[in-house]
Length: 98
Image (cartoon, rainbow, N blue to C red; front, top):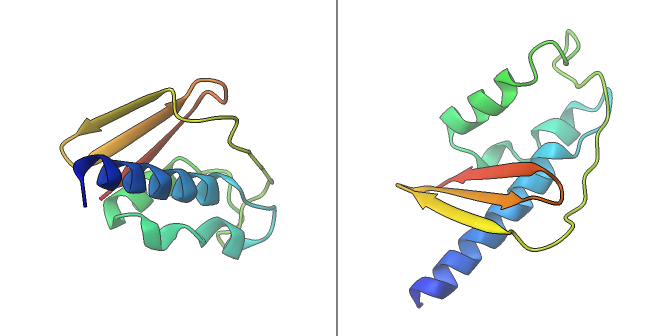
């Protein structure tokens, strides 16, 4: 497989994981943790730390949020084994550790 195809597949995987991670529903812990398997333990821990104060006593989100992809990534950066995808239209940065 060519390097370009590998990078494209990695980007699509990161987009899917980012979408799963940022779409969840109040009181539904499964909608929050459905992307956990696609994160490294360190990446998941960092993501969950950002939700401190926004989870109920059982770990379920106390609010709902839903985002849709508005276009292709406008900036793709690779540093070591971390791909960062930036879609400026959403002002969202999704990171996928591989």
